Length: 63
Image 1: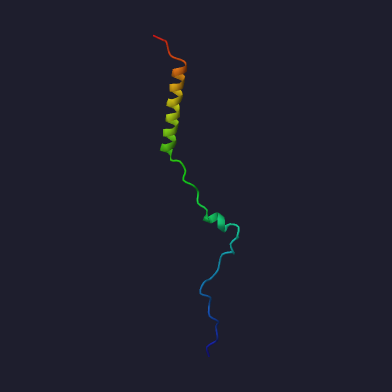
Image 2: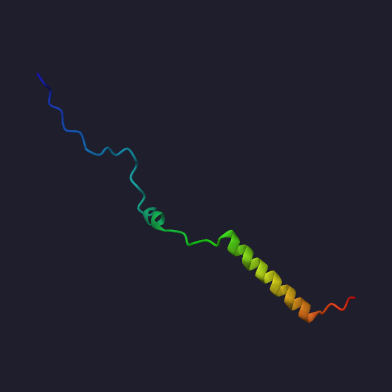
């Protein structure tokens, strides 16, 4: 004689319920960070500009 069994749920939930305050944080995306080559180019440009300013302000009169 077959025994009656209730149908199993289609989706088994094994995880704890999510914190509702965490969901918006997971949807956020970080902005594009500066690549290493861009940062290098900016540093090089600033270094050259500083060198030009110092050369114009304090000319080198050495032989």
